[in-house]
Length: 134
Image (cartoon, rainbow, N blue to C red):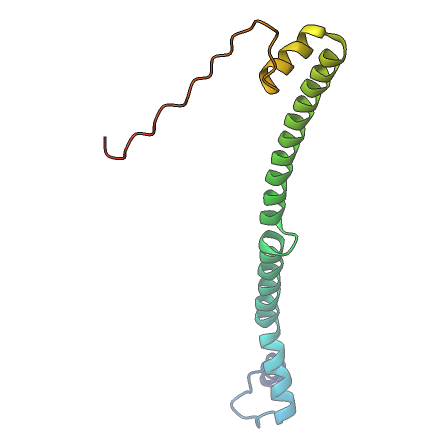
């Protein structure tokens, strides 16, 4: 009786006993598939996890793209602040030109080269270019 139990348990584990016939091909294939299922499943799961990780980091909407967009956003926000400051300065200049006669006169003299009667205008020529190597 103990020998029968060991043969039955050996057959159940997939290893034939010394006195038994080999299992049919279908059963051996099933036993082989059951043995390989866990390692194969583990390999597939790890491969899928690595693929998902790669996609999260380097994919179309991944972390690296997100960081680039974030840096671009910071640069654009800075540019917006600079343009808003410039816009505020230009509004102040417009208000001065609309209300301050001295500001109007200063702009006319500087930009339009106007002069009051009796003013002497001195024009200086730019320095001649230096030849290269000296």
